[in-house]
Amino acid sequence: MEKIKLPKVNDMLKRGWNLFKKRIVALIVVEILAVITVISIFNVSLALFPYTEGVIMSVLLTIPVIGCSLAAFHTLIVNKDIGVCKAIGLSFQKTHSYLWLSLLMTVLITFAYALVIPGMIFTVWFFLAPGVLAAEGTGGMNALLKSKSLVKGIWPEAALRVLIIMIIVMFIKGIPLVGRFLWGPVLFILAYTLYEDVSRTEGEISFNPAFREKLFLIGIAAGSVLIPLVVTLLFLHLFEGSFDL
Figure 1 (tube, rainbow, N blue to C red):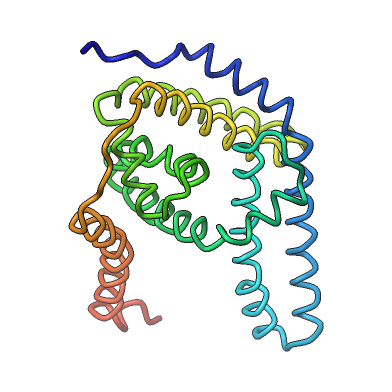
Figure 2: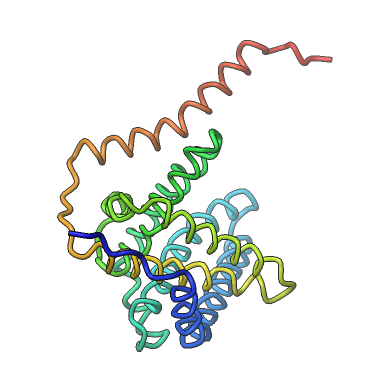
């Protein structure tokens, strides 16, 4: 059976633009609420606790706010007719999944870019993971593996679209004042639009990740953090006292 091709890039961008026009106000409201909440947390924490403890408390309380905001963002994008309040209400039960997914993606992709090529490969593999989590309700690890499975066989086409999306996002980031509020919605909307294209192209696929696949990803993530840490500690130990004046 002949493989169906991905829709043209222009089609993806057109549908993304239509979704952007429909949801941008709601997405910016979520952004503003998140910023106000984070600022309030820092102000209250620093007022109630000594500086160091206040900063630590602020960071710990800010983490779930970020997870909730990410969940609300994707809830608004996937469910195109619900309002901000309902989206935030639905996001609470998904907060932990988005935090776990964000942690995995950040660690895997960031440290992979130390070797350049693996970073590019991982970016395309896992780019659809937030869309998978939003649309299919899978866990963070399953979302990563499902994303990788979806782009299997169409990696060059998917990579081209990811590159175009990132160029658009970088351009928007450079717009004074409004860029900081727009780049997030644009990124999430286009990423989800690409997920829709890929999932429709692939159709229903059998997806039952083996435990060893999950263990492999966790091993890479753990190694990405531990190896630089161990190397740094060894370097400091070996050259201890070498930099004394």
